[in-house]
Image 1 (cartoon, helix red, strand yellow):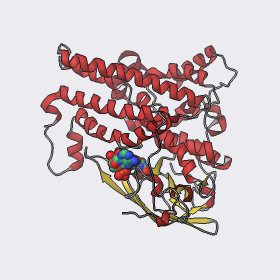
Image 2 (cartoon, helix red, strand yellow):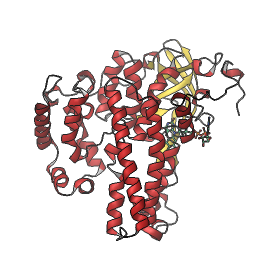
Image 3 (cartoon, protein in one colour):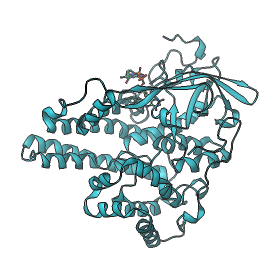
Image 4 (cartoon, helix red, strand yellow):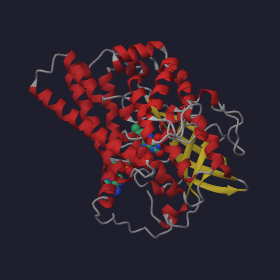
Length: 441
Ligand SMILES: Cc1cc2nc3c(=O)[nH]c(=O)nc-3n(C[C@H](O)[C@H](O)[C@H](O)COP(=O)(O)OP(=O)(O)OC[C@H]3O[C@@H](n4cnc5c(N)ncnc54)[C@H](O)[C@@H]3O)c2cc1C
């Protein structure tokens, strides 16, 4: 659903409000027993009966069979309206204002139903910036529809010449009265073709060093001058896009943080994104996808491969690492819910999760044998070709991106080296030079 009058000329309040009657009657004073009881009653009244049956009798695999994505998306606002999707957030933004301990009690009741959070880039990239640096009217305008998945979000950060060195980006923003005019090219923009809004980093002052001349904006993707061109990835599907901005007008009311302070604002987004990819963020891998190793073990059993000592050893190694990943993610989540920041632990989790998932998917494809690389499919229709590919092959190909997206493994290791191990910073001869004076390819 599109928000009425969203966008161009200022903050508007036209989106569907959260229905207070549907919000659960819980607050900070609720006891653990009360939280458990109220959430159980909500599940039995609002989670569709076939999903409850599947959860009780077949677990996550059975739920996936009876719950197509489109059906889940349609039902999802019911979940959001309960406040449970973001239970620790303030009520005004769509949460219940529960403590992290209370939220864990609620999560434990919800866990069997695998109610993954939708709009992951909204929750993990846009929301942290709005919380840390946004204005109250921006939070009230953008967070509730984001929680309901009514307005979907993506992030316009990377450019053809600025990925790891994001601060060198070249998209320009100049102020014209009460509006900024943005021109430039972004790339690898996940879900831009499905999104309503994007967070965007642009250069507002080229005369100062690169990190000091950036400003952080909310861009309405329906605005004139925005062109989204899908890119097809190695598995044949469209996930990400090139986005061209040609004199796109963005109201000053859609600026987050001060002009020139965009790098600091982006810090909240990038930490949130690392958390999401590592699985410790809202709706991260261990919450949405469930356990990868459980699925691979199940596949090994079905294929009769569990007697092979080499397979057993790999399964055990990956099982142990997945548990360690979950504990690391719990620690990061706990720190964030207690008001801290994910810190470098987010980078450690991100580095580990990337490699873990690649090895997991590789093993799943190995178990399948030749069927993982040779299957019947049409030659010319890319969509049908991607559809014919076994799940294991798609997941293996997709996992190659895990060590690139959200900051490459090498760059995250640099963060750990500098901020955890205390090694000297990478030398940058241009650290004090104006951005416009730095040579670029
Ligand atoms: C699936 C996927 C989804 C993505 N989604 C988004 C999105 O939604 N929005 C968005 O803005 N971006 C997105 N990205 C872009 C992503 O953030 C960048 O690809 C990533 O930051 C790397 O930048 P780059 O591709 O320009 O590679 P480069 O920065 O050019 O890096 C090339 C290689 O050099 C290495 N390298 C670079 N600098 C250093 C260094 N200082 N030390 C050691 N090694 C280094 C890198 O590790 C890499 O191996 C996505 C990428 C992928 C793969």
